[in-house]
Length: 475
Ligand SMILES: Nc1nc2c(c(=O)[nH]1)N[C@H]1C(S)=C(S)[C@@H](COP(=O)(O)OP(=O)(O)OC[C@H]3O[C@@H](n4cnc5c(N)ncnc54)[C@H](O)[C@@H]3O)O[C@H]1N2
Ligand code: MOO
View 1 (cartoon, protein in one colour):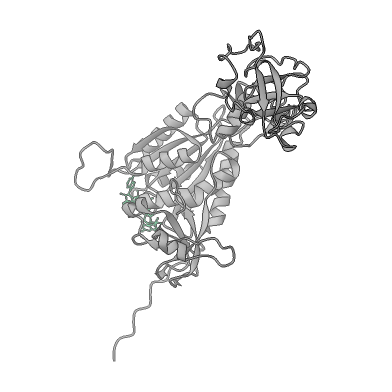
View 2 (cartoon, protein in one colour):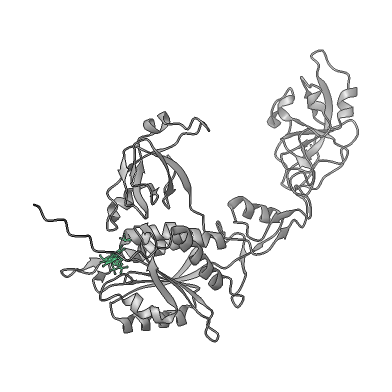
């Protein structure tokens, strides 16, 4: 008789923290560090400074005046008194002719429109006193200014056409619509009224907001300072690219990955360093960097799991940082904590991510980004989307697994459409397996496919949620 199989070693049934629980935990400690009242709340910038898009307004702004700030012409044409054109005897072909009293370029002060005459107005020129409508130059028999005006007048000067016998302007084919009072006049305040709120605390700056502030005559904008972070990678085996490798060594992928991800979250990475697996060296580097840079956030990579040389865990566990496991893969091992304010040194949030590059990158997207986005409008929130699986996939029970996937060919996507919304549901194909060393696969991926604890087997064609990776666009 065959021997009975040996019982599997019993694993302690400790419950791992769920992804949402850990996000909430990180949000709490980030809030303490970022919302410290001892830190400056605003920075003043010129609206022409670079790097303002994506920054967050620190004060409300009300329009100091209206936009447009004066009635002006929407077209190159003629400012007319509609009454004059209505009472004009029409010629055989329905034409009306009036004398040209002058030219008003953009930038000139508004002149008065003499009775029974017209004034040439360029787009943006002020509407002359007495005019109630602009007729575009195309509505004249000449069709173009070159046929009517002798030469371009000097900018900013409303000047007379100059002839002893004034030029005549013949309008043709005018309809009732062309003679509607107000036609082609951009009225004062039709865009923004004085006192309108044009920017609110927490709004993200866009190119058009910056243009609007300038249009209102405001040279400066007050923004929130960016969150300040330090990045620290660890490991005796880790070397910087450009230096030769000894057997067993590898290049530091986590440092550039962390810097780039944090910067895309709107964080100002002030310094980055890599240290050896020596607790004393590691803690010396941490305290020196904290003192030098006064950050709100310290993010480390590596040295936190179950090995004999877990420098981050050993160095920070006694300083208020906890270590545990989140029910996600990759990115299970995590460290988190708050180094409390000491004297004049404000509190610092500490987030310790696993060293495997894919674990580090996935943790940034699934844990750090959602926590930070809740507190800081400069951090774009996770971009979630529904995708359809091209092929069946098996996943580990009991954890949320993030599988790397690419959008399949556009033809396949076009064929797959959500009947409810009529929106195409993109189809995805896995790239590589679930392991956390597969950085080449991650670098090719468009999305992290989210498979839940119960998703041990998902059939081809099933729909699941996914996270669009930083820098990727929808198909
Ligand atoms: N006995 C156990 N071993 C491991 C467990 C466990 O639960 N029990 N968890 C595994 C999981 S899951 C992960 S993830 C890793 C996390 O390990 P650490 O955060 O302690 O990271 P290290 O051990 O320092 O490094 C892991 C791996 O990543 C490479 N690495 C580290 N830093 C970098 C870097 N800057 N650039 C590129 N690659 C880096 C390192 O060489 C290792 O291969 O632990 C598992 N083990
Ligand atoms: O959690 Mo680790 O990140 O699976 O490899």
